[in-house]
Image 1: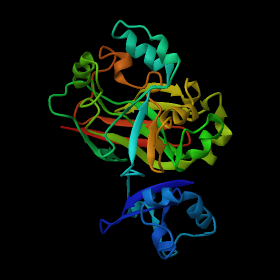
Image 2: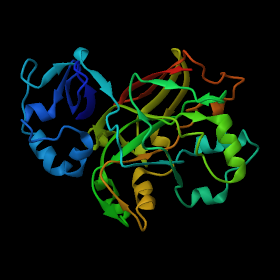
Image 3: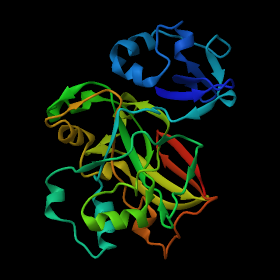
Image 4: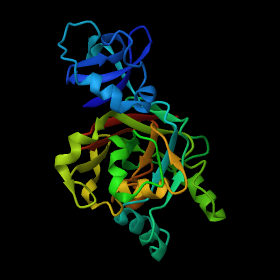
Length: 305
């Protein structure tokens, strides 16, 4: 199933799922209030609510079913409880560090590391992304995110997948020049990532990806285009740390809650930084960025000044 948050013509925000490619379901309306009107509340009791969802047999034209052309998709989880972004693709780590004349440090192979980003600056499909002031090196980052659907602490690896509700595309926008200044000091990234993170266009439940499981990831192609030109191409199966391993790390001595987001980090070739501005310039106002992950859809955004 593909869960969404969307805006109706009267500007009301609703939550639900895709019936098919052309129709969406307002779960609060079709259930007469038995299902919540937002995904964060849904995730807090998602096992119970999913049992109700599976009972519905809906068709276009029924109350609570809307043509997708009459609504606007928003970030599927516009108010996550937190956002941790990991650094889990070896090819990206190697290439990004080589650009700075550095090797991968041995510790990277010992533990999956992450940083906290701004969970209050979430954007969605079709949103315009404002380039930060004083930023000349704006970059995209092609990632996959998992959404936590169950509370847990000190989660063992054999149970970690049980805590995942679903997955979506994630664009970890980066102001590289601001980030470079911060990283010299030994902290960060902070302002280099603070302004926006885009997720969407929907959250695909984990059962949909199960048939594509391979190695520590999934055999899913990942592509990024800038103004229609293919710039990045990779595969999620190449991930070095599984989401299960990320969950184990994140939950050590800490309680994870439904509605938290874990990002994978950038897939190999998945940003301008890896290629270098001699291959493609930094992003400018007017650029359209399309991130595509097989089975998860396409996430499009335009940069503005």
